[in-house]
Image (tube, rainbow, N blue to C red; front, top):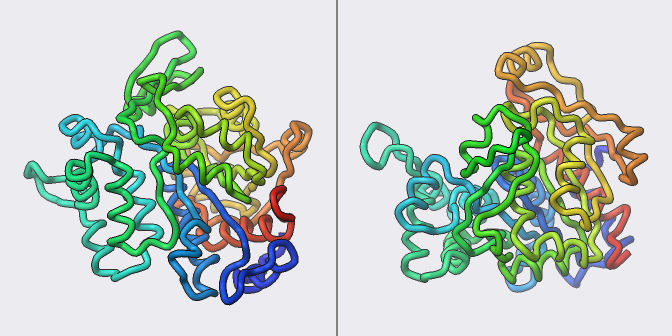
Length: 357
């Protein structure tokens, strides 16, 4: 895939969806997931979409929407959830920071995490602010919207559900464990995951965004605890199925110890299909950049290996596979936000959406 600049790619959009006068092309993108993967996608798309055009909040806010899982129960989020019984604020907080467009000093405050060994140690100030605003608003999604306005985010951040949910995993031996933070320590293949309560419903605004989207991006991120967890609230997968959007899955680079041991790219896709059988996935982005031997050795010592991609089998399953340079520079194995955005925008603009091309 050609590594054209973001500006060049954006200028090509008029061939598919003509730009509105003085602004962005008519394109709506929804990215879904959690962990570190979703903010990576948002960071890249925010730059790719909005840095070449003047920002108009009334017109452009719905151009880019994040739908984040709220099932995390570890760390700062877990402590606050145990006391205040709210959806997990951690993944939502990271998405808000990825889209922040206001005063950088305010974003720094929101990202601050307390150190030391006091009762505050480990807490993110952003999590505390979201918790306080949830108490004031008596509604988590309204609290998220208020923080979005404070940070002047470029786009929208929506929780997948407004309910206080926990993630349950059924293992291959029939054991059921509860809590997203316990999944990685299970050390047994995961058969299926579900939410408790089982009747948790999607946030209506998230359903609407998915139904109206031109491009829906799923992943990268922890397969079960981020990607599948975000698909589980009733209404999410169904909205994607009803939409006329092009659905793209960004394949993970490495397996995750305890969660996806031995998983190939096909295993990732099959797991998503088991949990959302009617939801289409039209395109798959896979990285082609070779990893350094020392990276493979270092991650291998932690029990992680490269996700093996059988391109012919993926295509035989009905997916369009796009091979891209997606690897970030540095010692860690990560997707590069700008490279990922280039590939996603190229796909969106050059292929067009089923809704508007």
